[in-house]
Image (cartoon, rainbow, N blue to C red; front, side, top):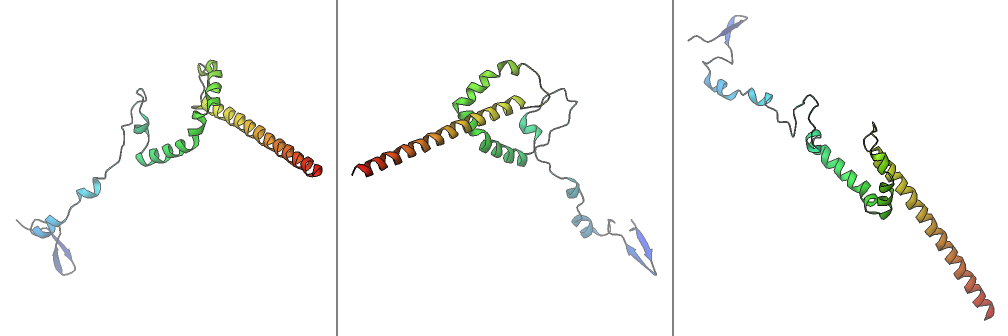
Length: 144
């Protein structure tokens, strides 16, 4: 079997992919470049079957988003005011909105407003208590 030859100038060169050079033939691997791994990819369908959260997002995005959501929504769900607000929106839950999480966002905003109101009332009460204590101390100081 003759090796493929390429004439360049005056001397012929043996091509590297020829079977005449077994060491070069065995050392060259071209399939590893094409075989790339893809993490957690799901086939794109026609849109008639729902996919899970894990199938829809890549693993590194899931870790970031779940961490962010756990930091920013934990207190709203555990607070008792949030349960009352969610019960008030039962009629709105039956309505279909084009925005996902729209009702939940409204509930969060209402809960935040009520929490701010409670915090403001507590601060006003603390100021009144401090003024009362100051007046009492002044009265005691004048009587002595």
